[in-house]
Image 1: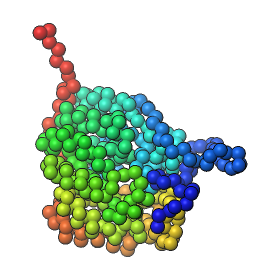
Image 2: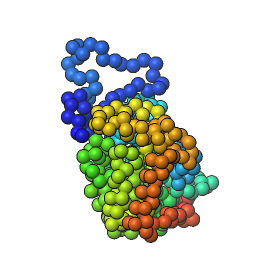
Image 3: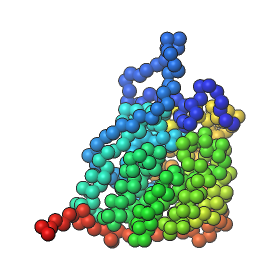
Image 4: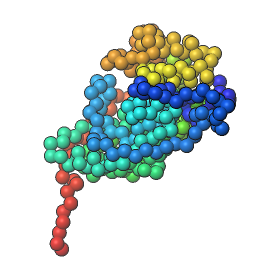
Length: 357
């Protein structure tokens, strides 16, 4: 299963760097003998600073249980090959392939913008999801701490926030998360796609191990921080058989809720995923591709609200049935998430009281 070819980029999900849909010209490798090194071998991750005008996005999708999202970073070193956020990197002028994993955009003024938004008298507090696009605890968070500062700002203003991640770095912020939880201001979902480490290293090369993600659930639960497991995305023929094991282990670790989505390959992600699939699972590539198509009306892409995340057809039905049975068996008390507290919000929290004495 493991690809050991010399042309395979170890530690990266994408193996190619397709042109963006907005490019009028692009680089090509025509004369190999004239190059001193392989064309795409640059391994260093580039950090690009940006200063956006806004930081909170209104979530229009009815498929996502959040009102707003906030993304401190664009691009993601985790390198998950299936990530739908890859397509958004093209709007920045970068490829959804290797660029997505190697060119990470850091929103330097994120906290300033968040404080400004929270300080508005007419701001109506509703849960903000971290991140909704790329992982807010990806490796560079260790250096920049934007996610930690966002959580601290939410605590300061008593604003509800939800987090989804697949990185164990979140345990660094147990202190802030605990305080938020005490006021019913936070919920955390840990994304766990399976239990097979060999598959994870190919599918999500720079994420925390599955074992460490289960440890994250244990740590959150120990600190009374509401948490659940997101078994997503499910890729038929790759990880659908692991649904019961994931839910059982997550429940034992303290998860009280569970969610699921079926993979969909919109935009350039389809090209990236097919290349990855053929290089890593050549013996079943066609079967997996056809089963994904079966879940989305004969196509691998799907943008239909209400259907795109759960799929349709017999294959999707069997996946969802297995998920429901697993929840019933291993997480019988699981229900819908408790609504976060929006009543405690204080827009005046940023006021500084000055005194002459």
